[in-house]
Image (cartoon, rainbow, N blue to C red):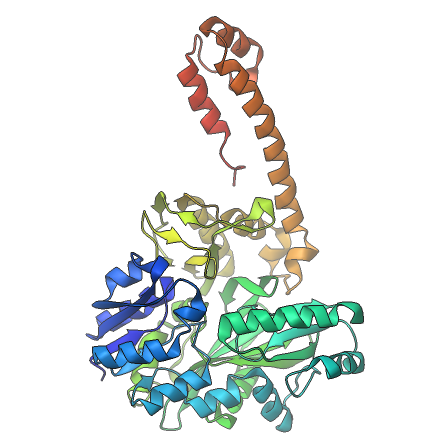
Length: 511
């Protein structure tokens, strides 16, 4: 077993990996950019080293610098987390060249399975259903021809990564080249790879994925499915396990299909086989050759530590359980907490955390990289925490998640917690009537935007009234309060009491 592991990531996933390493008695090395100098993951690790300036291309995507730090510290392995270099086969190859164990699939398996274009090729060859699309990264000259052949609308996807980054629906030929250039730029910035392919856009599918584990001794198993259909701009926001539409027979059939795909790719370590389900067929979507953001829901219903399994597999150990040993118990759900303002079109909300009170109690888990004083920078993804709950039924889980989100207090930034509560209170969601278009179909974003606008109008009026009142004499304020019931509580009142009441009114709309 390894004695020291470098975690080539930041935030909650870096802490997630480090916590398992601590349980296993493995020392950890953190890397940090300029803006992350005082981040929690840098303080939690046994050692921490500066990797570069704040932009990811100069820090968390700086493969040569990360290799250099790994060798200097004597770490035997690198855990990439998710995002950044987690699905970069060239980085995995660099690790092998420098006698460093990459905790993930071999570079050649990653190139075959993790690369979205390559994986579509070998899966199609085996007769497994896939959505129509391009067989290679598209260039401007052939993009329009391919799109016309498969029919609009089409979707653009990065060959190198996931998380909704670089994805975009194109409705007509006029928008194709412009959106293609935007997608290339985004993919290069996020993953260091500009390759984009085109796929037919399914209008109302469910997004269902299977977690797999594969050791270096030929053992491959699946740990069931996750439902990831609640998405905004192809970014998953709420995930659950199991899926309400997958029965035991279907789970066994599609699970076997996922295992077959992993075996065809000669895959090792943890990975996810993603499918799009249109109510009739499970179409292969892609292989995520890494740990997924939503892996905790699988852990909650199987009582397995996927990070521990990743490390043990990378160290050459045999999986210590088989497919028949996997038992599913209860239901789990995860809400991704992002630094975004749902009342203002999900505008990013970077800043300093001035208050942080995570929820607790039975069946509640928080994966977070926050403490009071933590910075939410502008350079990286807005995800900063995940709330995961478990219960014996889906109905219990929905109510438990609502309770947990209402308990959670984060100040200094805006968060998407009101969005999650709006979804959880929707009757269709409660029944499990969901798909990837759910948010737009139910008009949830429009409802939040309307509430935000109404609040801003009210606040403009309140600010004007209070400002005028504060300029009045004590007698004038008292007279004002007598005729304005909205702020009439105690009389007489000083201007300091008035100011305090204003601060109360200035809070965001109620959850």
